Amino acid sequence: MEPIAIKKDNEIIDLQTAKEKNIDIESAKKIYPENTPEALEVIRHSTAHLMAQAIKELYPDAKFFVGPVVKDGFYYDFRVKEKIGEEDLKKIEKKMQEIAKRKLDIQRYEIPKSKAIEKFKDDDLKQEVLKNIPSDTVSIYKQGDFEDLCRGPHVPNTKFLKHFKLLRVAGAYLGGDETKEMLTRIYGTAFADKKSLKDYLTMLEEAKKRDHRKLGTELELFMFSDEVGAGLPIWLPKGARLRSKLESLLFKAHRKRGYEPVRGPEILKSELWKKSGHYQNYKENMYFTEICDEKEDCVEYGIKPMNCVGHIMIYKSKKRSYRELPIKYFEYGVVHRHEKSGVLHGLFRVREFTQDDAHIFCMPSQIKDNVIEVLGFVDEIMKTFDFKYEMEISTKPKKAIGSDEIWEKATNALKEALDENGHKYEIDEGGGAFYGPKIDIKITDAIGRKWQCGTIQVDFNLPERFELGYINDKNEEERPVMIHRAILGSFERFIGIMIEHFAGEFPFFIAPTQIIIIPIAQNHIDYAKELNEKLVEMGIDTEIFDKNESLNKRIRTAEKQKVPMIVVIGDKEVEEKLVAIRDRRERIQYNISENEFFEKIKEKLSEVRF
Image 1 (tube, rainbow, N blue to C red):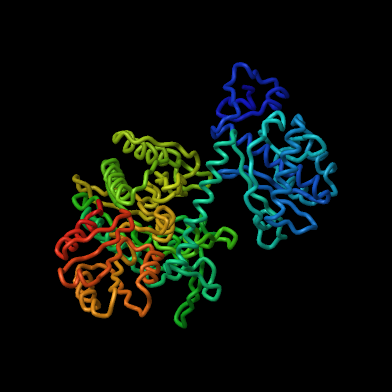
Image 2: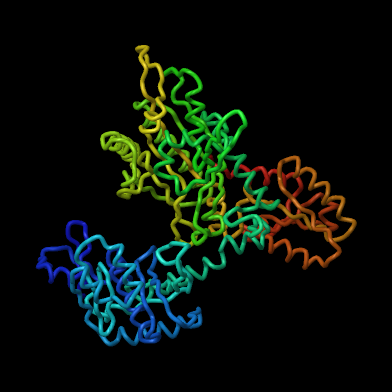
C-alpha cells in the first residue's frame, strides 16, 4: 500500500511538501489511505479540490472561496451564475469520478503573496482569501488545469480518491459575514474504502428518520415561530411534561448530593460582566440593554449568557468558614446567547436555553474529591439514559484570563481526578473556557454519533477577580476554588439528543405520555377512568382514547405517538379486573391483573439510577 502523507512532530505533511522541503520520508511515520483521522483529513481535503475541479469543468465561470475539512467531511464555498440544487449533485459526482480516473498528479508550489495577488487579480474571492493569509508566501495546489490557494495536505494523485459522496447544497455568507454576499456551499464526505462510506450513508438515512425537529413536530413536543423569533423554542404540553419530569428527577438527585437550589437574575449590571471578564472575552455572544432612571444616569445591563456571576454573588453575600466547604449551588438557569442565524439548528443551537448548572465552592485540597463525585454523578445519569460516553480535557485557549501557573494548576487537578478513577481521556489543546480548563463529556447515541454535552471546569480566576474568601482553620482568609458543572449541558440540547437517540420512543419514566388507555366500547369507559385516576395519583401521565372511531384506528393513532404502553380495556378486563398491555419498548403484548399492573408501573419508575 502506498503512503499518502507523513506525520512528523505531530504535524501531517503531504509527500509533495516533504519532497519540496527535503524532509526524510523514510524516517517519518507514514500515513496510508485508511480510515484514521490523519488519513481522512488528507483524503477529504483532496476530495474538496476534486469537487471544485469538477464544478469548474461543468461551470467554467465558477469562482472559489474556501474548501476546508469539517467533522465527517468537507465543503467548498463558491460563486456561479447558475442556480445549483440537490438535483445537480449527481452530475458533479460523475464528473469527479471521471477526473479521479485520470490519475492526475497533485502538485504543490509556493509563490510570494504579492505575486499571488497579481496572479489572481481578476478573482475577487481569491483576493478575499489572500487578505486572511498573514505570511508573505502562499502555497498553491494544482491538478490538471485546476489550481487553488491551499495549505494542504493533499494526496499525491487523484487515483487515491474513490469513495466519496456529495451530501447537500446550502447557502453561506462570504466569510460568515451576514452583511456580505451569499455564496453556494456544497457539503460532501469521503472515506478510504467503500464499506465505510456505505455505513456512513446508512447512518445518515437513519439520522433523517430520527431528526428531532421532525419528531418534535410529529409528537407535538416543541415548536418554533418566526413571529416569536429564530432560536427561541416554545414548549408544547407534551414537551413540557417530558422536560418537567427530567427537571424533577434531577432536582431530587442534586438535593441527595448536598446541592442547594438558588436562582440568579437574568440581567446583571455590565460592571459585573466586566469584572468577570465576560465583557472583554465573550461580549459578541451577549445581549445588552440600558435601564434609565430619573434619579440616576442610564446604566448598561447584560443579559446573562452563564449563571456563574449570580452564584458568585450568593457565595459572597456573607462570611464563609472552611467548615462550610464545599458549598454547592445549583440552578436551572435560563441563559441567552447571540448566535448567528446560519448556525441555529432545532434544539441543538438556540438563542435561549436552560442549563442544569451548578457551582461548587471548595478548598484547593477538595478539588479532586469533588470532581470525582461529579464524575460519578455523570456516570449514573448516562447509564440511566443508556448513553456511552467519553471525556476530553480542554486546555487554555488563546483568549484567556489568569496566569499560566494558575491554568497549569487547574488542568492538573482535572487530570488527577480522571487518572485516579482510571478514566481514559483525550486532550483538546486550547479548547478551554476563557476562565479555566474543563472536562468535556461526549456521549455516543444509538446510531454511533458523538455529541458534546456537559462540562466540568476548575476555575481559580473568577474567585480571584471577585475576591472570594473563606476563613481557614488558622483563622486566616484564603481563596476558594470554583468548579463550574453542567451534566446535561442544557435541557434543550439534551432533550434533542434524547429524541434522536430513542427515535422518539422514550423510556417509561421520562415519556411525556406514558400510558394511553383505549376502552373498546362505551361500557368499558368507566373502568378506563378508574385506572386513569389511580395512575394520575401515582404521577403517571395518561390519556384515554375513547373517541367514536374504530378500535384499530385508535390503536394506530396511539402507536404513532410512540407511547411506551397502550392499555386496551374490553369485557374480560372489566369483568376480571385485568389489564391488556401492549408494551412498545419491549415489543410484547400480555394480560395481567390490576394489582400486577400497578406493581409493574412502580418497577418501570425505578429504572432511574441517579
